[in-house]
Image (cartoon, rainbow, N blue to C red; front, side):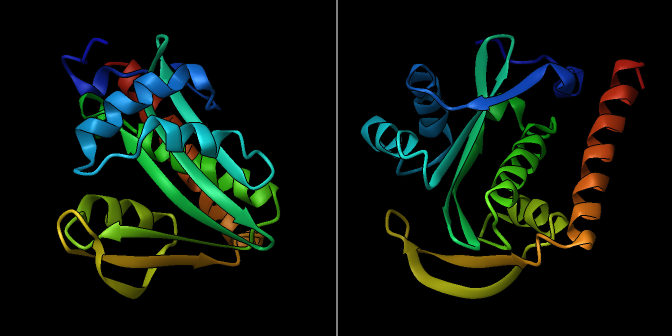
Length: 187
């Protein structure tokens, strides 16, 4: 995989979100090892991606390479984001935002009205992104991340089936599309 010389040269319209398959797991594991101190195993990913009735896993692909991925569990009116990560070479390019939109759309399509996730207390960039999607902190899980003993902030968004949330997602889509047009025009 080639890293971008300038992260802003990424054409987001060429980043495809696809259902994660077995063939993607090797590249997912490469990213997983770079971004998490205690990566999931490939066996765990393989177990998750076959549970299509209550799991949604997406891979973000650019020029044939997996550059990010995310997953969630659905249960009735609730969904929980289990993982989301972007290759460090593609941070701050919009790939994470595109993945979040894809995950949220999929959860809402399955009937989710509320979504939750955990995020490291020290991961301000991720918290900021989640807040843009309407997530708000609602709790703390002390020592949640076993490898470091770090606390997790529980974040939650509700009423995802309402018109206000649909409008928020549409604004996020528009902003992402505008960013791509602006960068493709050399600005």
